[in-house]
Amino acid sequence: MKKYIILLYVSVLYFCISCESSLDLVPISSTSAEGFYKTEVQIDQAIIGCYNSLRGVFVTNVSSYRMTEARSDNTFQGVEYDDGPVSRFQETPDLPLLSSRWAELYSGISRCNRVLYEIQNFDRSDNIKQYEGEAKFMRALFYFDLVNLWGGIPLVVEPITITDSYNVVRASVEDVYDQIVKDLQDAAGLLPAQYAAAQAGRATSWAAKAFLGKTYLFRSGYPLKKNEWSNAKNALNEVMRSGAFEFFDSYANIFDHSYEGGKQTVFGIKFRSGASGHGNPFPTRNAPNLIAKTEFGEGGIPFGGSPNNLFLSADFINSIEAGDIRKDVAIRSEWLLNTGDVITNQPFCQKYQNGPVVNASDWDIDWIMLRYTDVMMMYAECLNEEGYVADGEAFDILNRVRARAGLTPKTPVDVPDQQSFRLWMEQERRIEFCFENIRWFDLVRTDRAFDVMQAFLTSYGLQGNMSRDRYVYPIPRRVINENNNITQNPGYNL
Image 1 (cartoon, rainbow, N blue to C red):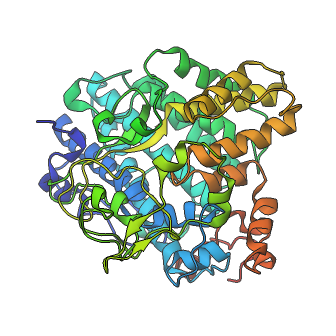
Image 2 (image 1 turned 180 degrees about the vertical axis):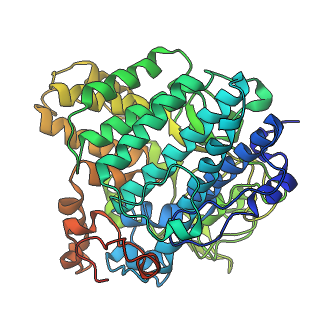
């Protein structure tokens, strides 16, 4: 039986975590439970708590995709859920989704900060070095989302009291990114390259280096434009040359339970069904609410769908080239309504909809946070930014992605210059990573969000809602009400 380390010691975790404040206004870490953090085993259990936060923040909680995928032109959420205003660019600081996401991310940071504080009392064993690396790796991922969602945010890297938390201020975007880089650099030097099977799912040095490359790439784009393409390229190339990962010949296999944890995954989040709420809700959440509760082969999905499912945009569907096999892997175009009618005009995302399932929110399928194809494509992007080369290595990489999708290769006639390559990359990434919460961040970092989303919103009569101020979200009103030192983002009313 597979036993994942991040799913163990649940009862101990609740004891450890219950001491944390649930206040979602500013980053807070309270005093640890008496007697805890005294042994390496307990530190390991606290690290598992950090992984549990990672799972909740990036997959389990609905805020993960509502503030990313629902923001993009891949979907349009006309319904009056929290992601409706997000999709229409009508959100206000009062939107509950914002404070929920803020709280989730800072809760994860709080756990990481507590671990990093407590391990200072331990001798520097290999285990302690690993735990330090894991905590810094996960803290970097939490801060990465925060800075991309809100811009400059409070930067707290050690436990603070509730009283102290009311005095924190917003750090600059650059300062937050500097901390992310430092954490990932430290993690890359502290983490092992691989683990024994029983420890599968823990962050490796390669995962840290890959996210470091991704961070340099983001810093090179909007808003910092730091021109760190060479740093990004070198980090990503090191991962590619490691031999630890593999470009799957089959796009479908990437999301197949039979291949989970394989070499297509640079870093993934483990899930297991039938383990007290540790299953993955993503497959059900993306199915229509009224889909028949039956087997796939009969047109439905086990246990039915969800009212929280994403509504795919016609713009996205129409952007897919004829013959692209990724469409049938990622999208289900025909399904059975619970009344027995066949629906053909409401496609939905079907990625990860396989593997053992116990109930609607309890699938045994892992979520890939960063896959090898992304590493390759970011590397190709760096090559192009350093200088366009007709039929060069960057062309080879994107054409390899296209070949797997069943598409013909592009030539310098199709892509004659650097800007054309950028647009080609943008489109390939849109289809390749659809519904993986990547599209919106891609549009912002390339400073294409204004043009793309204004054009997209025109068909809904909402183009006037889009501005560059909307590249980031408003700071939740509750945060500002509790701490007058935290200012609001431009373009939003206090």
